[in-house]
Amino acid sequence: MNLYFDTAQGPVFRPPSEANSFLLRVTVGCSHNRCTYCNMYRSVPFQVRPHIEVQRQIKMALPHRQEIRRVFLADGNALVLHTERLLPILQELRTSFPRLQRVSCYAGPRDILAKRPDELLALKEAGLKLIYYGMESGDSDVLQHVQKGVDGPQSIEAGQRIRAAGIKLSLMMILGLGGREASAAHAKSTAEAVSAICPDLLSALTLMLYRGSELKEEFEAGTFQILNPAELMEELGWIVESIRFPEGHHCLFRSNHISNYVNLAATLPKERERLLTDIALATKKLQQVTDWDPYNCVER
Image 1 (cartoon, helix red, strand yellow):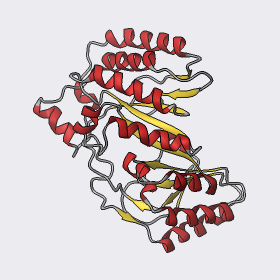
Image 2 (cartoon, rainbow, N blue to C red):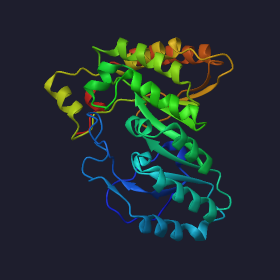
Image 3 (cartoon, helix red, strand yellow):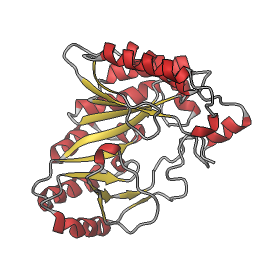
Image 4 (cartoon, rainbow, N blue to C red):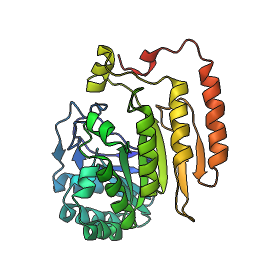
C-alpha cells in the first residue's frame, strides 16, 4: 500500500512497480502538459511544492521509517526541479529512512536533456536510482504529431544520458500511438530507439483516448484511425523482432499496464523467440474477436 501525505489537489499517478512506495509529491501536475494523447494533469496547474511542504510530507512518514524502502517522487516529471532543489531532498530521504533502497521518479525528455551529465551523476550518487522515461515513440513525425516536445534523435539522447549516468532506466513506449497510417514507421523507429538506448526495463502501454485529449478529438473527427487489438499485437511483434542490443545487455520487458489487452513478460534478447511466439498466439486469438468496439479504448 502506498504512503501518501500531501494535501495538494489533483490526481497522483505512479508506475505499477511503485505500488508499495512512499509517494513524495515534490511537484503538482506536469510542467509540459501538452501531449495530445494525455489528459492526466490537464485540470491541474503545474506547481513546485514549497520545500517546507516536502519536509512536512517526510516528517509525516517518519512513523513508518523502518518500513520505507522505496520512495517515488511525484508528480509527472519531478526531474524538472533544479538539481540544487533535488539534492537536499535526496539527502533528507537518506537521513530519514535508514532502510531506503532507492528513490525513483518520472522524467520527460526535455527535463532530462536540460540536466548536464555531471548533474545526473550527482543525482545518482545522492540516491536517485531509477527513472521512468515515457519515450512513447522513436519516430520524429509521431512525436511531433502528439506534441511530445522532442524529435526522434532527442528522445534517444535523453535515454542515453540516463544510462550514461548509471541510473537504472525504465523506458515506456505506447502501442498504436501513430495510428493505422503511421504504425509501421512508429514500430520501426521505436525499435531503433530502444536498441540505441539499451534500457534496463522496457514497458509497452496501449494507446487510450481520454476525454479532453486532442487525439480523442482527432479520432472522433475521423482524422486518426486507431488500431484494433490484433493490429496492436502485430505492431508489438514488429518492434520486438527488430530490437537489437549489444552482446551481454539484458532488458526486462513487460506489458502489465492496465491499458494492455495481453499481459506479456520476457527478458530480451534471451527470450525473444518465446516472446514472439506468445505475441503471435495472442494476435491469432485477437483476430478472432468479431465484436470489438473501437470505443472500448475511448473515454466517454
